[in-house]
Length: 176
Image 1 (tube, helix red, strand yellow):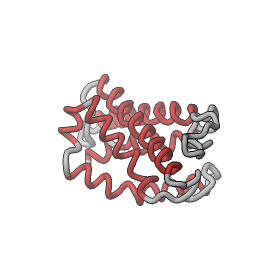
Image 2 (cartoon, rainbow, N blue to C red):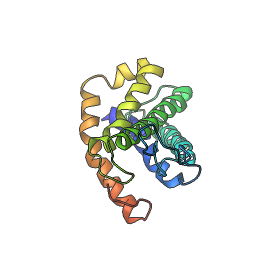
Image 3 (cartoon, one colour):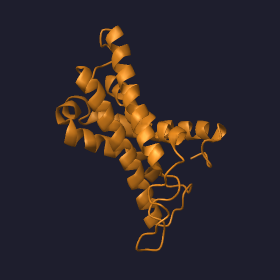
Image 4 (tube, rainbow, N blue to C red):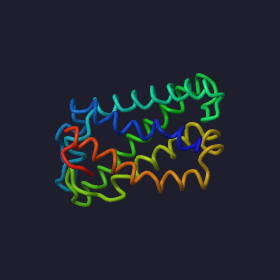
């Protein structure tokens, strides 16, 4: 359970990107070699940076709340870890989301099109990869094997529920 709670910054980063996005399209309307947009209008610098910021702040808040409960909810270690680990997870999460969009465009799925697990797993997998690269000891302690599998299993229904909420709030064009 602690591993799931401590992974929340990676999950929140995507919602934060939707809330803060809309300005400065990353691919600036350019097309890839295949003639399709590189990413599309849904991937913006304001969303990327805003989502990272919101994910990082969320992680720090989790650290403070966890400290109030004697770290029974889990911990990132010290204040440095409480900032760096959520920053790494949030950055990995949004980088994975961008990578998923890039792959979707290459296989002909337009913005807003259903991509199945390409909509749901790339952000989680990239968050794990970034943790492994930049905060390896934390990754090895908290996410090797079962916790990572559990997170990958629960991400699709959580992602779907959050997207439905975003759609009903008129923050997303489609409910997936």
